[in-house]
Image (tube, rainbow, N blue to C red; front, side, top):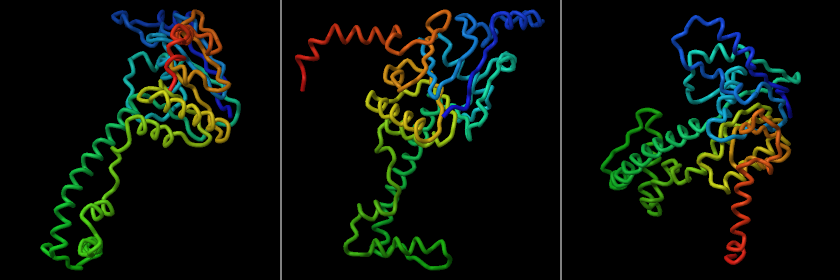
Length: 293
């Protein structure tokens, strides 16, 4: 599914006109001005999956955040904007195919990290509650904590007391049945993957900033399959900033190489850093062949 047809950034002439209008000569940094124009990135023609590829400092994250701001994308983590950010965004333009997405959202590494941190806080509370319930089990079993039905709030307490007094209810079973599962049993990669599957819904436009962070190669490939299925079956469109070979290999993606000037649409197998991976593994092919499991 395609919603966004194209997105246009200010070119060098438009940026120059903006600078002529400024009386704030004390500024030396006009970010995000002069970032994308330095590589002549002025427009993106969108596909169901559009990928912005480039090394650190190439501007792919800047482009993604500018688009998110212009399109009014929902974001979970705060983004620190420069004082010139609104001026730049105001000079951008977008074209739609007609039908608008039900949701526009940007997902960044900070969002995923904050989510995993929140899970740890939840786990800490669960662990404390588990220790409390170990003590509660013996108090209820031995009748040291009388339960009186004075309100509906006491109903759950009475149920726990009856469970604790049953002969077949062990301490571990009592705690397991009355306490939420500890989500820390999931690895960071599992939690990160779960964040994407929870946030990405049907008929949405999603901007993903380096989604490979916190994901193992196996999880990255699993995320790729999830994104491909979301496009094919659930009406989603994606714009992804990445340098992961696994993400770059998404089926039928249009990939912009921001390491080139001017920025060029290029097959993922021709990208410089992917070719470096390829060359490295070719040089070590014999070692792989001799050490098969």
